[in-house]
Length: 285
Image 1 (tube, rainbow, N blue to C red):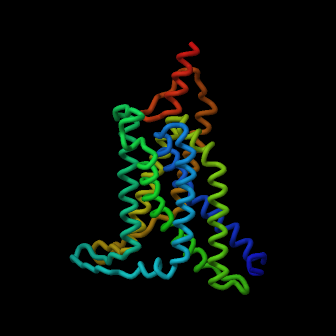
Image 2: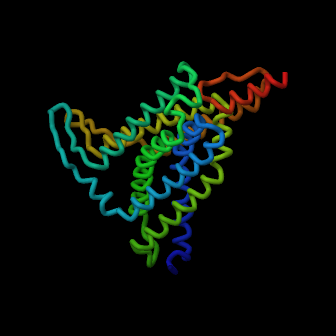
Image 3: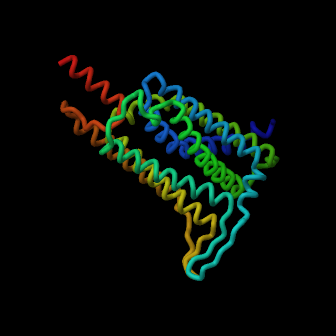
């Protein structure tokens, strides 16, 4: 345990905690949008369960690092001349998660802009159990991607003095726990802000589409997909995507600050908070 209190270990802990929080942004956005369709009293419960599931999945995957790394081995190789590759467990999970995220994001945008209003009793998509199932499925993919990134960071860095594999596991687990606690503290305000501003919701869903494309590229890269003899699919650096996300949010915050208006905002379907605020406003008027 003394290893955890060295300067190098504390720097590694801070770095991994920051990384886990950054990688958890897409998780919080997805949680905010899915939980925003639930009844107001169920929303905090869905967010808590979602983030706790994320923590559990990440820790389980850490203890199964040997199994996770074993999934890197290809179990089906193919070569059609113009297209070749080798499908592995890692590539299948990441690629499938990207497809699911693209499908879910596009479906949510359609529902919010053109879908029919859903009653709070009738639709399964508004139930807590259905929301938790969606959150759990995507958490598996997010957790898998997060752990692969953290392992890559730890493997590529020069290990601190006396910092063995056991110490690395302990620091990664501690970083995961701290990051989830931080996200639990901010998930409520972030969800409220996202669900009160339609443009932020659409931006959030657009970000999830970007993350889905990134996962598709990463899954293709892990499968070593190659077109012809020269063109191999490469993963998209996460830094580019997160820069685009933060820059877009910064621009939108400026727009919200500069263009405050008393007119009613655009109302998206299944936006419970905005519907409630408009009802209260109508009653007051």
